[in-house]
Length: 208
Image (cartoon, rainbow, N blue to C red):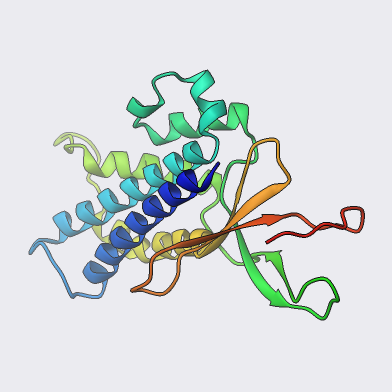
């Protein structure tokens, strides 16, 4: 992924931030549709859009390889299908949440470590995507009633998992040791990226 691709990825992450702000405003009562059921539907619509943005971010990260497998990638909108297609050619595509730690070292002053908290895993991704689909389709009047209150209560947890996944994450490039550190930034700031070369004792070159 060149600089153009990195900028495009950050634009997708900026849209994620806007959509999470919509969710937050509804959950804290700063915005409402005037009806609890439609509040829930708006929230889960944002979640579904966010999941699709994460999926298309993965597409951007592996655009050349993905284009070989799917010539119509620009028209592919189904998030779970995109995930499976990208995983088939780049198994390590999923965002990897990290934290930054200061270290005392002659070669570098900080290092990235795996985030150990609760975040949106790939299994969570599939679960939430299916849940969004169920909430956004018209309800069968003869079927089991949707428990909107339960889904409203669960929304804060889903939002937290998404934030923890993306707040600071590694974006892996296919067949390369390099990766991008993506930082979502404060509420009013746009996402940023930095290109890093993985460091090890056998690899004496460190770029960032």
